[in-house]
Length: 186
Image 1 (cartoon, helix red, strand yellow):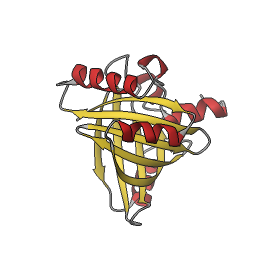
Image 2 (image 1 turned 60 degrees about the vertical axis):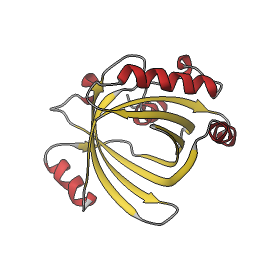
Image 3 (image 1 turned 120 degrees about the vertical axis):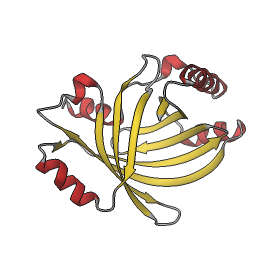
Image 4 (image 1 turned 90 degrees about the horizontal axis):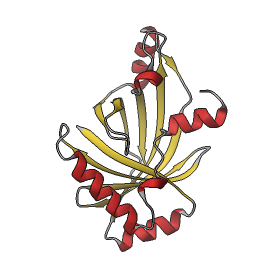
């Protein structure tokens, strides 16, 4: 699957949520997501632009927990954060973390956020409060292999405009990258 995504910094979280509702978005679940990213001497994630992580998720509405392993491929365009995303559930994230470290991967800065989901047709809006960074809005559409990337980008761009923002405001750096920049670790 290909995730076509843009992200902007949000100064007023309540204001962006109200704007989403005015556009017809409906509230979905609220999750706490704790991401552990990995690096390795034998694989240059920064140069390639890909990422490997374990995500521990807690649904704040139900208390349900779920863990996932995700590989995010390199970016597929320069306007958005479009990339291939491969993801699968994992029964024991602590054990998988040990497997990765035994294979030579090292953990890097964690990324912890509370994410509120909003939905409108095939468009997902995520209003994130990221520890140490503040609030953000991500808009994303999932498409099949390269099919529909341009149409998805156009739809996301149009929605940004309706929300009072534009593509020039988008941030292409990941939350991990933003945390590392803030901490001087890049």
